[in-house]
View 1: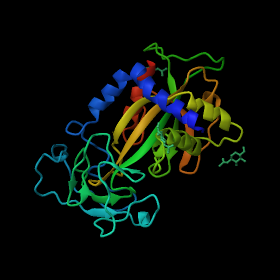
View 2: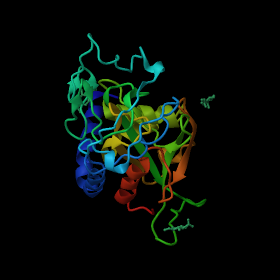
View 3: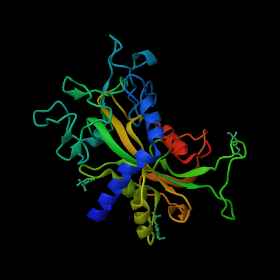
Length: 307
Ligand SMILES: *[C@@H]1O[C@H](CO)[C@@H](O)[C@H](O)[C@H]1NC(C)=O
Ligand SMILES: *[C@@H]1O[C@H](CO)[C@@H](O)[C@H](O)[C@H]1NC(C)=O
Ligand SMILES: *[C@@H]1O[C@H](CO)[C@@H](O)[C@H](O)[C@H]1NC(C)=O
């Protein structure tokens, strides 16, 4: 992309939410907030691919403000992240002094939920206890920033007419979902924001890497992404890999193909990280990885689609 494209995309991302999704953004923002939202996926289970059992955390013990004298979470950092370029060095360390709550060189250590606490040299999960300290399998201490493109089109019949649900009378929206290889759940085809990378670049890169095997479609996909995404969410993700000291946050944008003539036409093939990819009907029964369904719900409201 050229600098001009960047500027245009950034401008669109900044302007569109104000016009279109104020209500939606407010709604999600009011749900996922420290002191209000209790994560569920990262509590009371076995840490993925580890054999490490999380220390029990009841609903009443999630918030750090609630006393929990017996709290004694195991420390776990997955061995495979040691020495990876995308991962931080271990802590505490004599040689590694992360700049918490700010842009640390190229690495964004700021949370969308304001300043997080740092206790005994380690950042604290802004939502609360997870029953595990250390980094688990996440690369960064503190926030791990991802970007999630929610690519949608209207469901159409063989004649190309939009299909509505007969009960609600509303049109059915379809999204591109990938099946994750780690937990087999369907998810938004997102990924991690590389240090110094613009979220707009991550969104397109992850979508093409994860959901598309495009050969001659590159220009079309490029154009589709450039023409505008609507911001639907920025904040914490209730991810099963979160720990007391490392957690996922994401920026989600909706890229909607209204007439189905752009990416809506694409046949989909799985990329490296995914085992499967497809256009999925969106409705209230949709089960997705982490709290992705809550994020997709914002798109449903924005587009006035069937749920
Ligand atoms: C239409 O939506 C309702 C819920 O609002 C659902 O129970 C029903 O199965 C849907 N109909 C079809 C044909 O999918
Ligand atoms: C990302 O976008 C901002 C402005 O929108 C720009 O200042 C910055 O240089 C961009 N970063 C990269 C890595 O291109
Ligand atoms: C991608 O598409 C090309 C051309 O259609 C095909 O040869 C190749 O096997 C595909 N790769 C994957 C990973 O599906």
